[in-house]
Picture 1 (tube, helix red, strand yellow):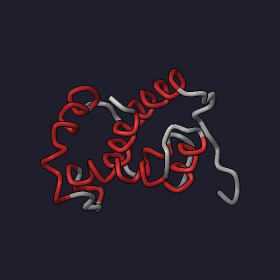
Picture 2: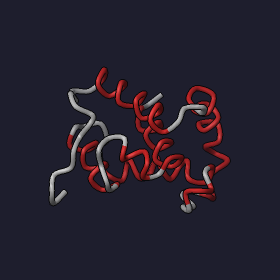
Picture 3: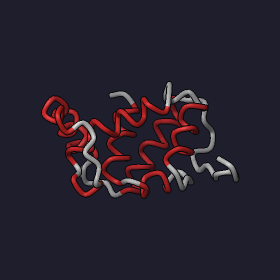
Picture 4: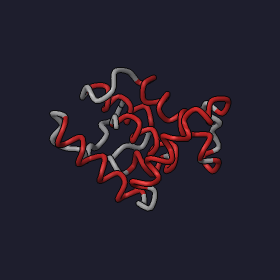
Length: 116
């Protein structure tokens, strides 16, 4: 499973609470961190992965790719079966562990600098 699908699931399910687990206050700074560390190719890559899952989490107030939701239900079911019972902190820790183990990122507890 690619990490960006897991990140998109976390963003859609937990909204800003997910990015706060990484020390960010905005999605744009969260996205930039992922791009600058070569975890994602572009900001759009991250946003698109979130859009895949938005139709399945109506509490997030985003529609995402509502017209394609049936095409991606298998991804949600798989992630739900693996991690669906995790709270935001536990889920974010799983993502952090994966990134530490598979990318050259030492500190996932990033603190935003003014201007980001």
